[in-house]
Amino acid sequence: MSHLLRRLRLSLRRNLTTSSRCFSYYYVRGAESWEPVSGETISVPYLKVPMELLKEIGIIGASHGWVATLKNGVVCLQDDLDLPDTDPKRIPLPPFVTLPHCQTQIVTNVSMSSSSPEDEDCIVAVKFLGPQLSLCRPAQRDCKWSNIRITDPSFYSSHVMYSKRDGMFSMPASRGHYIGSWDLRRHMKEPKIQMLRLPDEDPIPEMTEKKWQRLESCCTKQHYLVESLHTDETFMVKWYTESHPIANNTLNLWDHFLVLKIDKEGNAVYTKGIGHLCILLSKSEAICIPSKSNRKVKNSVYMLREHEFAIVMIDTNQKFCQRPFPSSLPYYIPKRLLIYFCDKNVNADLHVGLSFGSLNLGGIVNYKKKKRKERRNSLVTMMDTNGLL
Image 1: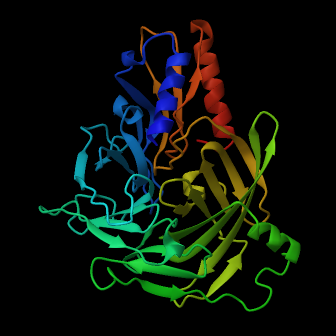
Image 2 (image 1 turned 45 degrees about the horizontal axis):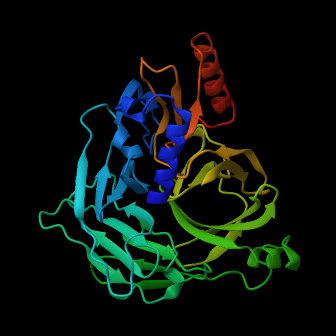
Image 3 (image 1 turned 90 degrees about the horizontal axis):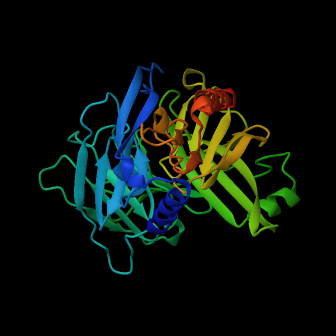
C-alpha cells in the first residue's frame, strides 16, 4: 500500500505545477448521507475533509462509513467522510501483535459489527493475508486485540464480513464449499463450520463443461459473502478473472460473476436474479443495497478494483459503464460524494470522484478559467448519466 501511495504522490507532483502542500484540505461538494433502511438522503453543500488521507497514512479498508488506516502498525478509525460537517473523529486502536508464522502488514479487509465503533458491543475485525484474524472492542477501556490463528489454509485469502443474522464474523473458503465463522466467545479458537449443499446435478443448466473449465482455469477467483438487511437474504458472489497480455505491457481482463443464494440451513442455489438489489464489490466490506432508493441498477454487481470500474448484470454477465479508474485505492464507502480539491491561488482542480464513496485518488484535470465551469458541469452530467453519481 505504501508503494502505491508513493506512486500517487509522484503522480501528483508531475501533474501539478504548484506544490501539493498548498492543498491543506479539500471539499466534498453535493455530499449526501445514506440511510440504509429508508433510503432517505440529506444534502449538504460542502464537507471539509483533511488532506492526510492522501499522505503517509495507508487506507486498509472501510466499513459502515468508517475508513480504517494503518500507520506504524497502528490502526485508526476515521469518519472524515461522515456527515454532518463537524469535528471528525479519530479512534486509535492498539498496535497489532503478530502471531508466530503470520504477518500484519498486508490486510485483506476490515469489517465492523455495528455502525459506530463507540458502541459498547461493536467489534472490529481485521483479516490479514494469511492465517491471522484480529478482533477487538474499541469502546472498552482496556481495548486489546484478540488474535486468532486460522489453521485451515482455505481461509488465508478470504474476505471477512459480519453476519447480523448469525452474530459472527464469517468467511467463505477458497472454493466456496463451506463457510467459517468466528466470535469472541465459543468460536474463537475453533470456528463454526457450515457446509454448503449445492444441487447434485446441473447447478446451472446452461453452463457448458467448457465454460466451467474456463472458470476453473481463471488466474483469480475471489469469493464474497454479503447480506441484505432489507430482504434478510445471504449471497455468495464468486468473481472469476482471466487475464491475457496485449500490447504496451497491459492486460486484457475477462470477468465472470456467479451468485449463490444461501439459506440458514446451508442450502445454496445459483441464481440469476436478486430482485431490486445490487451488490458493491471493492476492497471494502461487500455491500448489498436496494437499487432504486440508491439510484443504482437492479440485479447487478458494481465492481471496483485497481484502475477499473464497471457494472455487471447478474443475469447475463454483460459488463457496461466500463471505464478506467485512475486510482490504486478502490474502496466503496456508504456515501455518495464528489470531491474537488479547491485552492483559489491555483489554476487547477484535482477531481477525486467518490461514486457511492469509491475512493478515486488520481484523476487530474487542468482547467482554464473560462472553461472550468462548462467542463465541470459536463463531467457531472456524464457521471450521472452513467450511474456513477
